Image 1 (cartoon, rainbow, N blue to C red):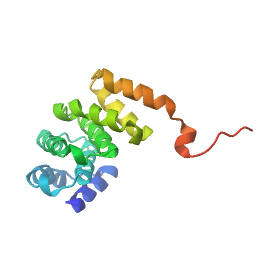
Image 2 (image 1 turned 60 degrees about the horizontal axis):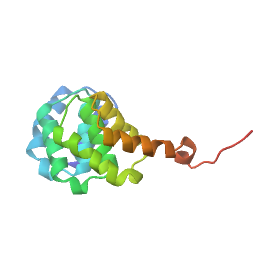
Image 3 (image 1 turned 120 degrees about the horizontal axis):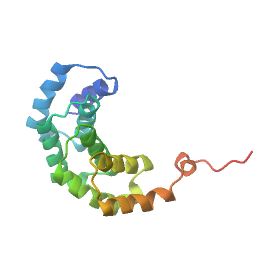
Length: 156
């Protein structure tokens, strides 16, 4: 399963169009979903989103699996799934309903990039989730580019 995810992710990143490959795995991944890790499913979702292939059944199964295994989710996984679902224009209600709770509980563990990915996903669907955007608006101003890069300010 990890090899499948890596191959699909490579095709997605390189924008290599291989419809037969993506068609096959759009059917195969849901059948074998329990053998995949959250990380490999994030890679699969990301690859399909990059290819602009919104296979509803595949994304539905990935979203269901992520929600069923919510205790094993980590900030990058949540951000990647939300971002990929929004790029593929797939609204998985349970995932989008429960993700803000994860963010609120673990906001300090989210990177600035991950916070922005979450915000963009909700913004793309024009979902006005007030507690989510409150958490984002409280977390983002405390971060700066200099602290994210690990450098201090320089004056010349």
